[in-house]
Length: 393
Image 1 (cartoon, rainbow, N blue to C red):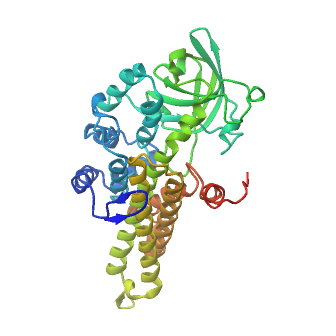
Image 2 (image 1 turned 180 degrees about the vertical axis):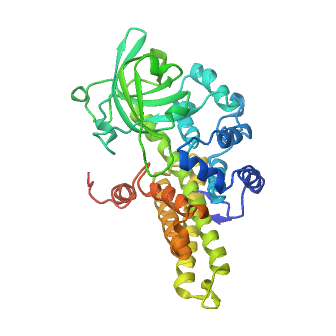
């Protein structure tokens, strides 16, 4: 055990039974399964169903609503193992981190209405409408509006990079309910809604898929006088930005687990190939030009693992962990990308062949340095909020 001022961090191979269970499920979905989906840009329905049936996606839902009630550390381990095996949780991971907004700020009625169905796999909460084409990372300037009209809100605007909405029954939406010029703070006047998407395209939503380099089922969404019940509002009107911020630490820690898993996947593939590939009468792993980058990638991965464990421990003990969550995201994203590049170099020309799965995972891994938060934004957060440097934006 490693003692810190803030938390006690388990350094042993924690949740081994859970790790084994996740790995066993993932074993039924080898590389050819993902390659076939990638080629046709199809959704991994069978994989998501299996993850749901085994209760992995409801790990953070309290037992009273049909979930497992596990800590964030356990959920992070689930995502780590999924990606260590070469699978991808991107099609269903949002259900874990969007859940926090409902759990912490939703009404009892909303929880009772939706959480049991989500835990049972009868409902999917996969879509998260935040980003907009003109606002980028400055969420406070979003232009999608929701105007109260009796027992309803009328939504107009556009969202982009809204993944999985075509495979989701429910959606979290961030929209402005008070004009910016009427707010004292730029973070005020924004509200969060839990929207039932069933039949939504028939009453004011236009969903257009975006063709991207990775199979994440990304779309842009247009709202045209889209009416939703007033009880779709989560918490208090105008406080939605803070509700979303409240869940970002969990999101960043969870997705750090995915990057950690990707790093481990690439390191294992690189080591195995370096030991097997014979060139000039010797395994290429004997060459320092091959082995040193792999060793460095391993060291960076282990360092990221420690930061993720610390962030999880602090989060699960309800301690402030903004810096730790952001550092977990930064270090894991960089470790995964460096491991991906190293693995690609190790495989050489064969890395370009789809049958080896390296190029697919390489493409997927690059996303972590950009979304849901770029590494540069993490650094500006640390500079301002931890080091005390002037605000840069």
